Length: 90
Image 1 (cartoon, rainbow, N blue to C red):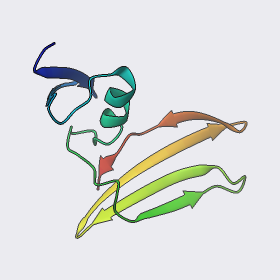
Image 2 (image 1 turned 180 degrees about the horizontal axis):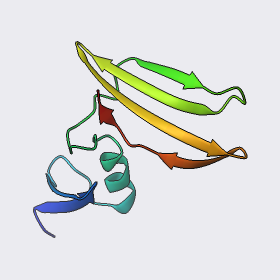
Image 3 (image 1 turned 30 degrees about the vertical axis):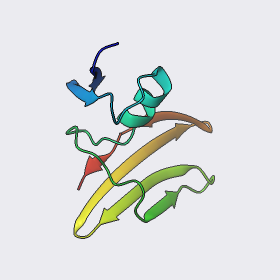
């Protein structure tokens, strides 16, 4: 078994140490979902502010850590989610 695992996300190749990372498809997906579009870790354990549209769909999620904010936006068409911006540092 290799000592590291490579992850492709947002056009970037990331390398993670297997000592602190479980090498499975699901954990890789979860790990990648916590990175912003620049490949930096988003502190998703911090407080969130959520925004909803008139139909009750989640259309925005904001995480704040000190003076830094990350936003994630979603669009819906006929009640179905169509896009996810990924985490973007504001």
